[in-house]
Image 1 (cartoon, one colour):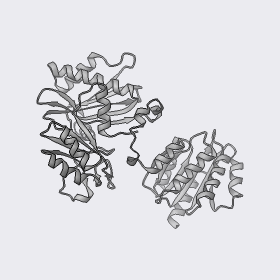
Image 2: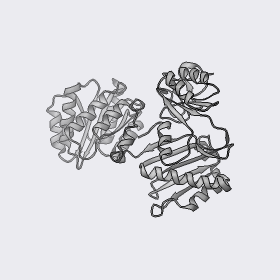
Image 3: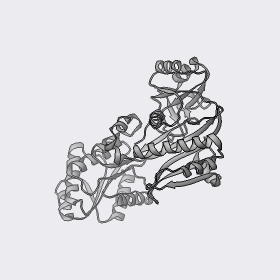
Image 4: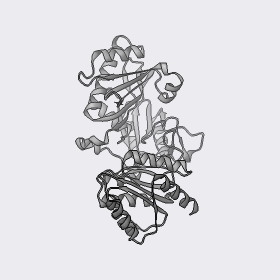
Length: 398
């Protein structure tokens, strides 16, 4: 689960990390009031969307010469003008794709006098089962570009969970960033605060880009991109309360209600599969035969008829879907349960596109019989290769 920058900074502040003063705003009037509460004379007006690259992004409605989604204002009047331009308009960045995202929230922040910019992030390193830090002197840059062009400017290290964060970790970061004296001590303190927040809130990723040194000699977290481990959210109702569903795909929200692993994609063939590995193989083979999947959907090993019905309804609700492939290898999941769920869903929502069903495994004959006797126009398939070829052919013919 992702949250907005201002929400991430509030969490960092809770753990003592240094952030600038600021206030969220949902309207132009709120943006003006927020600016009036800040000391000024510089204000930063930041679009709040779940995507990076906001400063370099462009608003669809404002033309190619308009400023981006993060702007420096020199007066309250400029804050008001920028808020009018941003709110309700669509910001396109390298991470949103060409469709962009509508800006519904702003963050009005006190301006900072920046002397140096660094990059600092924490994430779960699955190879070592530890929290890893990524540090670079190239703050404000896309870290992917830095990794590609100048990998020597990136330092990574992990923290042993048995000891937690230690003083030597802080010294490692200070040395990598060229910080000495009081700034080195501040770096160690900030690192500890970030680690504590990461562990306490079950984060999956925390990116601060940039981490700055001000001309007054203070280290600050000037940005905060935070992602949480969704499997841990039951422990954090305070984090769940921060969820902004307007930033998420409606189909993914519906899928989460039924504990379905669903990710919307841009293709034309809807997929319902059990098991993540089989689902990935299904997406690959659809692509191999010349079409693209419309989603990743893993119904899991122990799905009920209700869950399967919900999954099918979510697929058919996508207007881009021109065909559906159900690919089930029954182990824990029984083929007859899948068949009944598909029949129930089709009866509820209708079937307007070609449907290919491949069943194999536990209770496969019962499942095939249920589908045969349903009277539905279903195309049976013998194996995954056969299923992929048949659904691609049906979509191209339609």
